[in-house]
Length: 304
Image 1: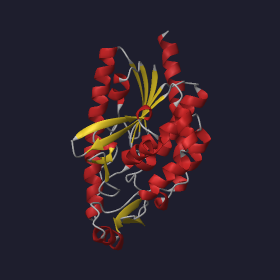
Image 2 (image 1 turned 90 degrees about the horizontal axis):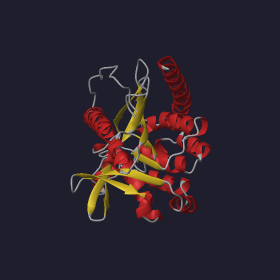
Image 3 (image 1 turned 45 degrees about the vertical axis):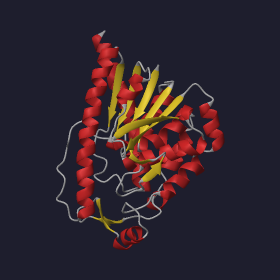
Image 4 (image 1 turned 180 degrees about the vertical axis):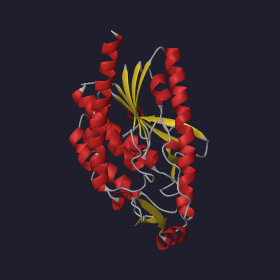
């Protein structure tokens, strides 16, 4: 069984979409299992339905307003290029007055998911042989959970997709089934092991980070940039551990893993959703996947 795994990575998911498009459209890979975390969970249902142009259009046109019902930060351009976030004091105060536990709210994302992944598409996917699984973090029980489309009805599964993307404390903390849930990346950034445990023998893994670190982060300028740096550090540790464990389990199961990293640093802040950049990243992912497979084929020919 062949599986596609897409890691978390916020706006960098656009690059992952381009890679996935090449694997599905050009290489004609047929996947029976899709496993996603955070931004990956937004992609996989449409990829499983082979609705590549639809998800490309949706994914490369989102803005901050598409995600946040109450955005806790403002985006500022840096002097030497790039962007950084600063606190939107009014919005954060408004959230606290309402008794919320996070700086911002992402209810607009929940609406967007329902608008773009219809009940008819859900039914079509659920009746197929393809399994779609999203990763969530159960903060109450301190454990990672994997939610399959086969186990839930429409509204519940949409909730799990949304929850998988909720990067707290900037986005919504969701109380469901008696527990508090947040972004799946906090526990399983790259869920290779889960794909293998579900029977995959070949796993294509799209990792929305470079294989090695190419930069040092600039000093934090405010509490938000500090929080994003700390979270990025922790998620980076989780990601590397996930990959090591995945490789170990694959070797034990005689399974094949194909890793697709981003070749360059796309952004230092994946909470910033820039339509022009995301359109460019999608195309970059497509070109990168093509080039990588050309190189792999050349290596195979040399070996033979």
